[in-house]
Image (cartoon, rainbow, N blue to C red; front, side):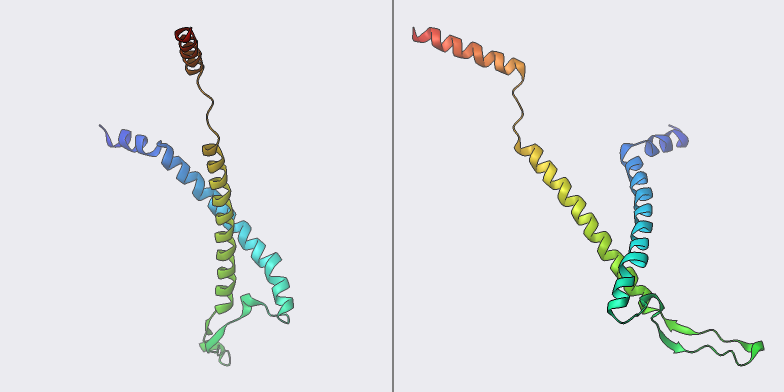
Length: 138
């Protein structure tokens, strides 16, 4: 079997295609959550905390030195505010996935709980059995 044919069989399996679709949708969902956190959730939190912008929060290890234009030194800082934003985004994504999985599990349990109606041949055989029992009693 040629390498190209093997690769084609691998790439066309249902699981690989499902994974690709999941990755694309996940990327788009990540952008939506980022926008939700940055433009909707963080501004009210900033107002509640006295106008603090989390994305600008940092711990400066070495300040920038711009006194000598020939030898500019960039600032060295730990941006913990961006980490807080990312942590909030993660919590929102985790909660959204939890809700989706919970809904899917609820639907799955509901389908399992409902008994399947008997097949027509089973119904017919049951009627024949009952008729035979009735004849034996006579």
